[in-house]
Length: 293
Image (cartoon, rainbow, N blue to C red; front, side, top):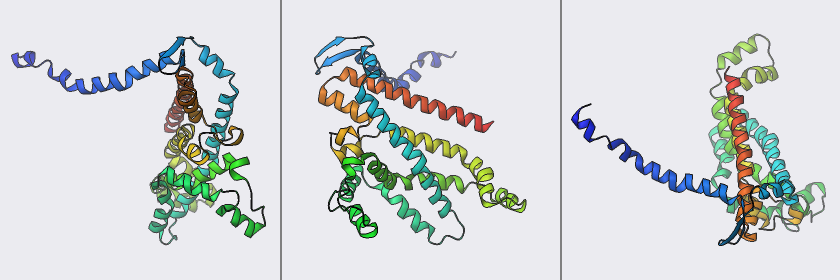
């Protein structure tokens, strides 16, 4: 070791110190503190007592938590089985050679994801309004449906799924479109020459080619669904709709921590949510590795 090296041994540590400091202050300490907080029952910001795992035991039998979990799962299934097939269908349509004005349609379908959630909530509150909402007016004039159909009173989750469909279908379409454009045309042509129909080419050529992107988009949709908060909060208010039909896990965490004041129980909900999202991430990794083999 040279003399200059011995005198400058501190330089790498000095360069790393900003990251280490930020990590310790803003990530490591809050994470450890949240674990400790999840084992306490709090009565506002100052009063608390240690309860161990009682918060998690109570959570397992909490009917409101089960309600929030069920609502979140329903919304996530709507995102995966309704929104993503629509996104893939639009991507295949815009990837067709005979499609004219594809650039314009891409902009039209993607543009809803550029607006803010507050704007979307205001628009869909007007669309789903009971008496003069646009959706009820169209359904009544076209199919003779009751013009006072109570979307936000009895069908909260379908209304949220429709709003999210309009907001995110174009966003996910971009991922699928990029994946479809990387499918090798010679493989599709070879399958066509061998007598494979359109459905067989889609199942045996297109799907395997876009599987990595598809698994990523599914993971992204699941994580986004389980983090759902702004849309139902703005559309329904903090009450989460009649009979908590729009209550999600993050909304329940917010209500418990900032309205009830029990930050310990809210931290327990947050850690359960973190565990669920971690399971999704691990599952996506396992599926991706198997598809690469």
